[in-house]
Length: 148
Image 1 (spheres, rainbow, N blue to C red):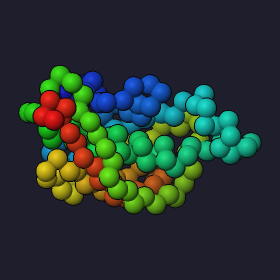
Image 2 (image 1 turned 45 degrees about the vertical axis):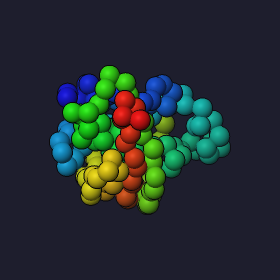
Image 3 (image 1 turned 30 degrees about the vertical axis):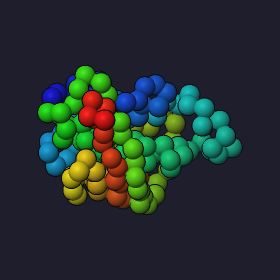
C-alpha cells in the first residue's frame, strides 16, 4: 500500500483532516506533515490577540498520522475499499511550544505495540525549525468496517 493509498483510506475529511503528506512509513514508524490553515475558526478566539493552535488539534495531528495512518498500513492486507474506523483510547501528551496559524508541523510515531487491532505509539511533533512542540504516548483501536 502506497502512502497516497493510506491517505485515501483515512476516515476523515476537511475540515477535520489533519494530514497533508506522509514522508515515511514502515512496520515500526511513520512520519507525516500538516500545515495549520490560518483561517481555522479556532484562531478567532484562542487566544485573543495571540492566536495559538489548541493542544487538542496538535494531539489530533499526532493521532491521525501516528495511529490512523500507521494502523491502516499495518492492516493493509485486510483493509477493504472502505475507510477503517479509528478510535483514540488514551493519550498522555506534554506540550512545550506554541504553534501559530500557518505553521507546518511534522509528526513522528514509533510503534510500541500492535495486537488485537490496538495500536500504541510514542509520538512527537516538531515545528519547521525542528523544535519539539509536544510528545507523548497515544493508543487507539483500528477497526476494519468489513470485519464488523
